[in-house]
Length: 187
Image (tube, rainbow, N blue to C red):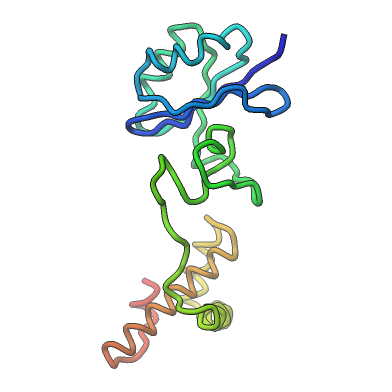
């Protein structure tokens, strides 16, 4: 008998339920309304072979976990904030979320961020990255900000955050005809 695994990407109004086999092949995938009866009905044909159900532990997971456990499912909570993300494996949709791969840009069909587009064209973006490199190297306030950021995210993301702050500071310098204030930009 084939062992199956289920993952549920839980949103406020709906959930994406995905069932996979040992070979990571999708056996079942469907977006359902957040009703316990609908989720149980979707998992019922697979219950005997399900090794476990992983549920994303967002703020609204209690009703689902309690209901699944009451009906004999082995439930595991996934804290998405604490899960190590796999670089290079992000597909950017809920199907990949429910299969234990993080979503890069979309959640529940809604756009969640768009990177760092306000640095201007690619040449200005490069220039601000270069400026960020020097600023991190030679300014203690900016270096402290960069180190705090780098402790939480990837180093390049931290560097781009510095570049973005420098770009915004340049905009305000030009608009307000003022001088650069490092404490205001990196407070």
